[in-house]
Image 1 (cartoon, one colour):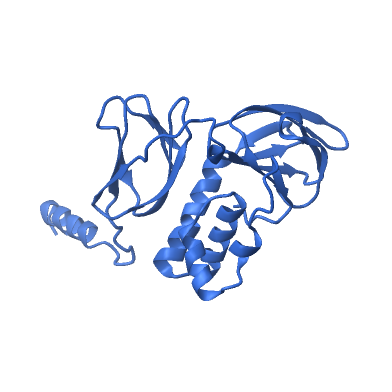
Image 2 (tube, one colour):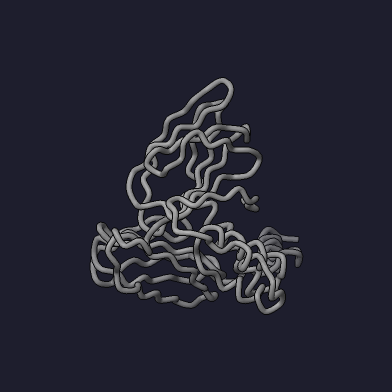
Length: 257
C-alpha cells in the first residue's frame, strides 16, 4: 500500500473512531443582565459586569447551575438556572433589596477535621459550642465580618469570615495542617447536581438530599415540591425554623460532598 493510500486509510480510521465514545452534548451559554459593577458567580466562577449587557458565561455544561449575584449595599441574590445544549440562557436579576433587611440573613456551615471541636463566635452568640460528628449549621447569620475560634485538644485556630447577605458559606477547618478552606462553591455545585438529578431524572433520593440541604440552609427548593408530592410528611416540614433567634443552630447531618 502506497504512502498516500496509507495516510487516507489512517485518516478514515481516525474519523470512524472505535465506536465506544458517546457523543457529548454541546455546551450552552449564560447571559446575566446586570448593571456595571455587579459581581456574578456561576458555580463559583466569578465575573463582574462592565456595562448594561451584564456578564456572559461560555462553554457551560448542560444542566442546572448555581448562580449568585452580589452588589455592594444590597442583598445577594441566589438562583438555580437550567442550561440547554447549544442554547443561550438569559437570567434577569430581581430588584435589589437593602443589605440590612433581615430577609438577607445568611447560613454558615462549619465542618472540622478531626470532627470533635469547640467553636466560639461571639458576634453570633456562640460560646464554646461543643461540636460532635455532624457539621454545625448556623442560620440567620447577619451580613458582615465575624470572628470564629476553633479549638480541639491540641490547637486553636482563629478565623475571620466575611458573609454577604443571603450567602451560604461552608468552611472546613483542618486542624492538622492548621488551615481553613472555603468549600462554599463545592457545596453549591453539589446542591445543583442533586437538584438536576431530582428534576431531570426524577431521582427520589436526590430530591430528598437537595431538599434537606436547602431547607436546613434556609432556602426554598424546587426539589422539596417533588418530595412533598410523594411524601406529605417529609424532611421539609420537620426542618422548619422554630424561632427567630440569631443564629439558630442545628446538629443534623448534612450529606455534604
